Length: 482
Image 1: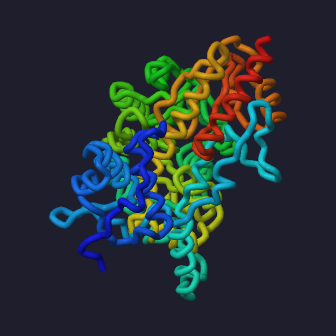
Image 2: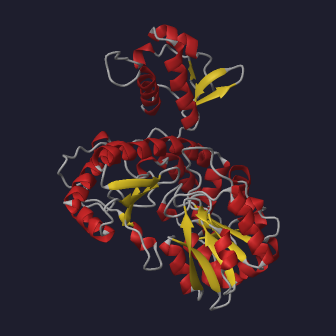
Image 3: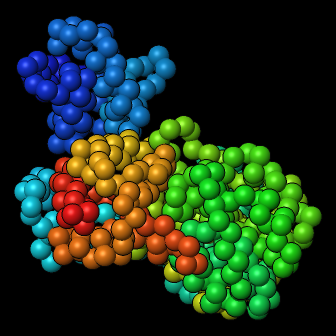
């Protein structure tokens, strides 16, 4: 039950006007800490911005800015005519890593490898596992374990648990602009499985499939394992150019693309190319495999809608995963298939490995329907923006002249080019000796015409650690240049 008023926050907010941190940041941190430490309780009303500004003897602007950030991240919630309250379900669920584990200090020449750990900056495709709402997830999983019925303990449906299929369809319609209903959604272990499944249904062995060059090595591996013959198509700053497909006379049966955030270079396919690609697929009776791997996180504009949402002729198989927005060990992805192909896909899904584990499907369905997932996404956008900015600042300060950023508009990694065109594989080896894990850009090319660069993941690491890692990266690159 909500309280009608709250005690003054003055005692919880010790502002230091001589500190480097701006006032709005100090107010934000003070309220957030009070919520996470339980001094402000769920459902408790917080003062109006004008009242709090008066108590703190500051202008209203920093208080407004702090409240806006807390509302955006899900710590506070507003009700028209009632005021602003501490959220009933907190994004962190009052759990944070211990300070010693959260902010490790590294010297400029130190190794960044944590003792016994394998998660080093700049590992790719790693979300903010340190900021995951563990308590909310644990409660849901525990509840599902206790209430798991006999039917749910038996063999499951090949297409997935109906509650999760419905929740995924609702989320995709609302947040990604995907045109789908629950019966079109198939639950799979991940995007690799989805690609293998789509290739098995849509292609015959030996069929030619266009892939982005450079592109995701995992997609190439999955398609090759399904018997496809790969046709690398060079991409530019805007992604794949459909006119190159038009010029190909070898009979391409499908194209695998990452239109919202091209992997690895980061470009986004503009509307003109999206329409041209859909038109090409229609005229050539070809298929489009859309891998929408981390499109929820975009920093220069609102997230771009899915290519599938523009498809009027049912030529797109849409692939997504929860690995980048939840945690990789969850192993839950999904495939949205055109309605005429549903039965064929379900039969192929059953032949692959019968069905996906039921328990996590049930838990994930509840995580979505109760709103935890959307709150987590909203909060993570702010977290990843700060981490991206920290990495970009570190690169500008310590890697200028040796590294050029290609694109950092979206996603969980920054694509860069080595300015001296050195051996990126050797650079990665040198980084590994210093406790860093980067990915060579050259590994994303299927042909010999590769460019030398580094892919630097930032999602899984705090700002402080990224800044220290940039120092080590600059040292390694400086020695390589020397």
